[in-house]
Structure formats: C-alpha cells, structure tokens
Image 1 (cartoon, rainbow, N blue to C red):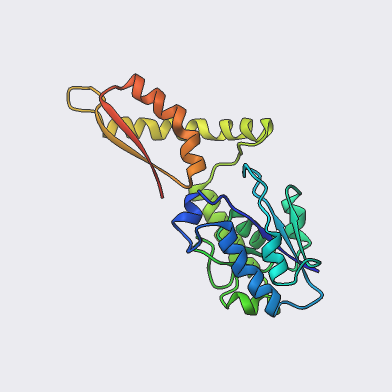
Image 2 (spheres, rainbow, N blue to C red):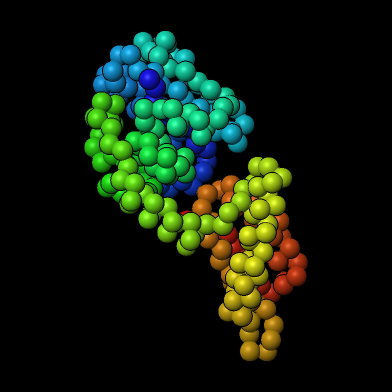
Length: 232
C-alpha cells in the first residue's frame, strides 16, 4: 500500500499565495517527518514530479535523514490518474489533483488553502492522523461541488495535447467573445474610443504566461487601453 504526493510548481500562485510553503523541499520535509513517525511501517510514499517542472526534484538527504530509503519513491513521470486510483490516500498542497482524488473517492489531505478544502470532502484532522485514519469523501457532496465548479468556473479542454487544445478552443470561443464584448463595452468612452484599464484575473502564473500573447495583441489594437493580468 502507498500514499501519493504530487509535487507542484514552486513559483505558482497556488503555492506562493495560498500556502505557507516556499519550496517543495519545505513541503516534503513536513510530509516525510510526519510519514516517518506516524504512517504504518509497511506503507510506502510515492512522490511525483510536476509535468511542467524544468528540473526533476528529489531529496535523498531528506529521505536518508528519516531512514525511509526503502519506503519513499520519486517518479519523474507517470500516470497520475492511475497513481491516485490505486493509492491509500493523496497528500497535496492545493493541487487540482487533490480535487481529482476527491472525485475518484480517494481520501485526501490538503496542506494549503483550496476551494475544495471542505468538511466531508477532505480530511479535517492533522497530517499525522491522516496516515492511519483516512476518511473517504462524501460522494453526494463531492458530486455537487464538482458540478458547481465545472459549471461556474471551468471550460472543458487542456493545454498539453492537440486533442485537448482543440476541445479547449471549441468550448472557449463563444465564452471569450461574449466576455470580450462586455469588457469592451465597459471601457468604451462616450466618444466611442476604447480606453481605460481592464484587469484580467488568472489563477496561477502558468495561466498568466499563456495570456501574454493576447495582452500583446490587445495593446497593439487598442493603444489607449491598458490590459493587466493579476494572479488571484
């Protein structure tokens, strides 16, 4: 049996603004210290690198310090879905994989702040208690929360494969055009010129980076319009 710990990007706003951690090393030190002291001795820990991380991070010194050389395993790549499904539980800072684990009915512990850190969805006790006392998510509550999040905040698609990008474009075009029309109306002066300041909220620095080409184009088309991206 094993617990699954997916790493996140250290520079992402999810980590910098919505957790007490400043590095994955700091987060892993907390997890390994707790695991060494309170997890069943026959259980393992699988730590997976983030797919967009430039460097594969692992810490043999931290593992050795806790004498966990044969129980902690670092993966540079792997099927996160399968790793979640077969795990005894998932530990995250606030990764969206935590919500995925909830959706799959897998016990989850959240170390940071997350929109799904709700009683009935994820463990409310300490990390020390989680290793031996996992609570499965309430299926009805999980279904309701996930449907609400998808309906109000998400568009189906992705950035990491041609199929996912095509799906994202199809589902995004109408929403973006409608939002663009409302935004331009809001910053159109009485004289009909586009001017003023428009602030776009993004969740995470990765999303902000993906918006950069759009902001550049907007600046060229509307020189009197200031478009800002702010991480939320």
